[in-house]
Every structure is written in structure tokens, then in C-alpha cells.
Image 1 (cartoon, rainbow, N blue to C red):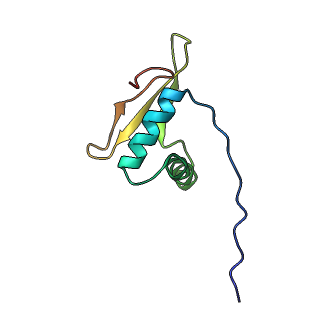
Image 2 (cartoon, rainbow, N blue to C red):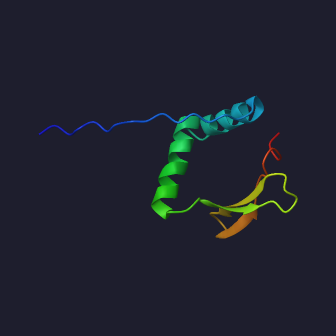
Image 3 (cartoon, helix red, strand yellow):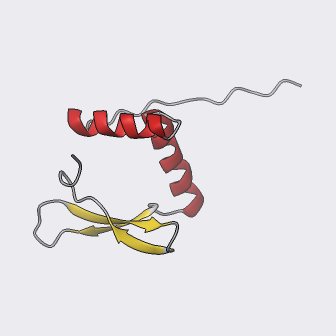
Length: 87
């Protein structure tokens, strides 16, 4: 019996051009593309039933802060605040 094809859905995300370009270059270096990286994020979130990094409200009210689990140290390390930190 043939396996049924999975129904696929599209997701549209708006980001600024510079972040898009830098992320695309990074993921290409890592052997994937932006869509693949977003798919990995979603799979990991569903698997863990949580956002795969720690997200907290920004006390200054200018966005949010988050930290990413460092795979080597097994501890959280500072990451990017909304609109900051990328080159």
C-alpha cells in the first residue's frame, strides 16, 4: 500500500533585509537554508513542547530578551535582543 503524502502548509515571516541575508548566509554555511532552519526550530519546539531557548520580557519594554542553551556547557548563554545584536 502506498504511503499517503503529507499535507504541507506555508508560513510567512517578515524580518528586516539585513537579518534575512545574514541568517541565509549562516544557514548555507551550516548546510541548510532558511526554510530548513525554521523547520528545525519548529520540530525541536514540538519535540520539547517548549521554545528551544529561554525567552523573557525586556524590563525596558523595548522588546524581548532570550538566551540559547549552549550545547557544550549545558547552560544558557546570552543571545540577541529584538532588533539588536546582528551585524
